[in-house]
Image (cartoon, rainbow over all chains, first blue to last red; front, side, top):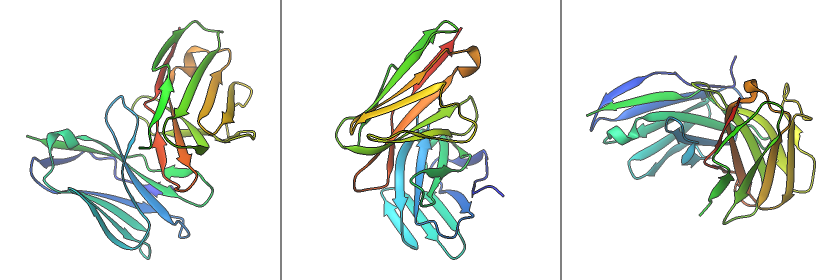
Length: 110
Length: 115
């Protein structure tokens, strides 16, 4: 079983819609969770971090964490074509390093 | 804040030569830096973790004698690919983590092409 799992996609949504990206993790002791966005040919950039159960909002982005279900999600409201990228879920398992999922490719069509 | 730079952004070299890549945290002190490699259409693969002033910890399957890592200061880590071969051609990305927060910030990456 992979430590961090994401649907590879592509997830296609029309412009203006809500994109919902999901991630599950296997280490129940994980304490911190991150979403990164990676455009093709570029390095990942941090979108959000979340540490506590519940929702955390930052602009059009909302991260949701449910530790009991070992589930992290990212909602993107009012999706724009510029949001088209691969979204990486990362989990800190307590050994300094992050464990990354394989990423979900998001396509936002005009 | 939390800016990480890498140099060079692109390098083309002949097989057998060594290539050094620098990773710098510009506006924060990085106690830990990480080196990743990414092949086309694949996910990030962690190569090694380096802590300032100590030897790097390499992931399983990564040759430490081939990929030399030095983390001499709290703002600089270097990765040297020794005796590079075409199969080493890849996108090398560093990330840095600060003293207080465990968030990793990524550099822009270095694309290596070995002919």
